[in-house]
Image 1 (cartoon, rainbow, N blue to C red):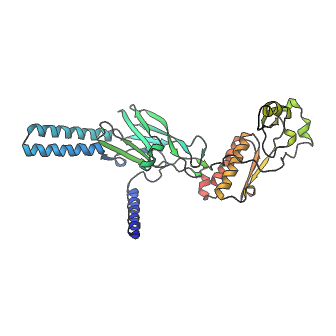
Image 2 (image 1 turned 30 degrees about the vertical axis):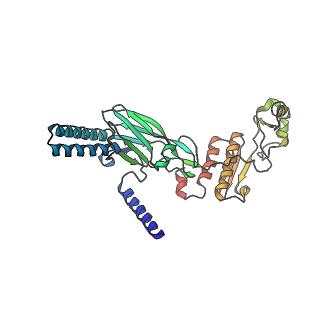
Image 3 (image 1 turned 120 degrees about the vertical axis):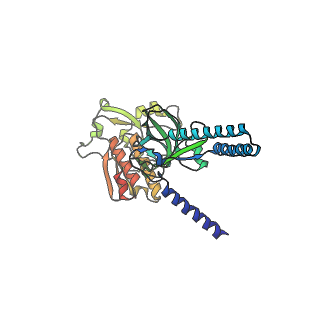
Amino acid sequence: MAGLISHSATLRQRLRQRLSSMVRGWQPEDGPLILRQNRIYVLPTRVGWLFLLTLIALLLAAINYNLALGYAMTFLLASIGLASLFHTFRNQVQLEFSALPLNAPAMAEQPLRLTLRCRNLQGIPRFAMQVRVHQPAALEAALSPVILSLQPHSDSLFSLAVPAGPRGYFQAPRLVIETRYPLGLWRAWSYWTPIVAGLIYPQPETPSPPWPNQEAILSSDTPAGGANQLGDSDLSHLRTYQSGDLPSRIDWKSSARLGLRGSDTPTWYVKVLSGQPQAERWFTWEQTQGLTLEARLARLTAWVLSSQAAQCACGLRLPGYELAPAGSAQHYQQCLSALACYGLPAKEYHHG
């Protein structure tokens, strides 16, 4: 019995693969998509099947009882159904869809907003176009579809919630573009899997772990005692204390006034001096020993994000890859990109 069930599952999988190779839009496509006649599939909806059964019943009754009004009613409803089929198909043909690169960082296994553009290439209005992620019916409620209506020769920019998937190069899910306009008797749809440029960063460890214990590394051109020679006039701003900060950088007065009074869990504040080289931190692969691959990447990602929030320059050292400490937004993005692509095929780095 178990062997029969396994054989049946294998046959269904092969049939699905064969159908997916025959249906357009199941493979990733680069560039804009123009919905032509060969990309649109039309079938009756549940209401449409009931409508067809009603027509058959009316026709059989008219033939059996030789009712002229029965024939008239049957052919009138049939003509309405055929006209609805034409308008459903025309409502979708000659639409152009394109995908924009990801405009914001995304974390693994979290929903993100995919920005798409739809253009109406004809001089007729379009109504009730639906764009959604192709997924099992049990998960359809998790990601809401987008409903579009376009005027002649116009375009619309919209965003669609999609699952980010695992870390690495973003793989856009298969999208379904469909309409049931005007009467809901027919469903016209098309599949589209766009190629979207962007990276998915590893999901950071939560709560964010403390930084590894290490001494602050100052640039070699800093004079001895330079950290203490600057007065309060060189104070830029304050930030919360992070594990490994030098005790000499703690602002005791501000901590007593802001972080200690009336609090069971005191907050320490550290001085950030203008014109003074920032303390540098190295986040290395060896500091995450004992964790799995994804757990290591999650911890390093959390450290990089917390370093960015604290405006502290950081460096990243992975096996075969190293980024010198820096504090620019581009540097933090490079660190996260390196973590996203670590251990993946070389082609993944090309799209980062």
